[in-house]
Image (cartoon, rainbow, N blue to C red):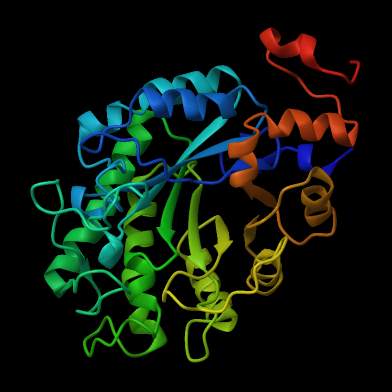
Length: 356
């Protein structure tokens, strides 16, 4: 049988298979609230046989959103808006996760299809923050967070996690990748602080470790905790895979169950060798050297490719992004192509080509 369809149990949660939907921004929230678009968009994955759906980067505070069209989980009302999609996914045995995030100096943008990048105050924009007063290319200079600000955001991540669990989410993921706030602290290309949050590896990773510790403390023991990191800045002198292995070891001791292994985003002009499966070696290195579960992500598109990654022990699960946007029922397609008989939603069963 294909390894793609092997179940996986993490703490108290059993995933039907290892085909997982990667968090993907939709820019369709209104005032931070998810709505009908999200219900239909994510619901389509729920009917498609996937094991886990990870909701897009969701601001732990309003100012943590990437854009004016991104969701937040800043209060109970915003959290409650996720309940219908969670209930729907659970009807099909699909688990739901949420990626808790703060965009840092990449925050307060318009939607990607708008005619300008940054949102003004009149358009709903706000002052961005970061580890230092250093702007990402093309963005305004952010305000450097104080130590008191950092403590407040650690609490915001914990509060958001509590709301997410209450809403019904099965998995919590902390977004610490792609040049967003937590990455802006651990990357030496960005963080030039001289206090306890800057300088050494220990200091630069302190904010992330504090967030993880706070989140793990407030969520149930049986709830899996994932962290997405950028395993490399793809630039000499930047964050690298050796750093990532050491970080993964530390995160494991703090109660993190799986590393969602991505890369890049710290600077705009990094030379990334983008090709099919280009980030899989990161997942493999963390899995073998840090002895932690990993998810592989990045240009994984074909069932045979995804299955091979699992069969050869390169990762424990596969996060699919654009392949899922093109075909929300990719898991059903993969089962047919690999000759695996799985349960289909009753209303779709007549479309299967592989006989039971």
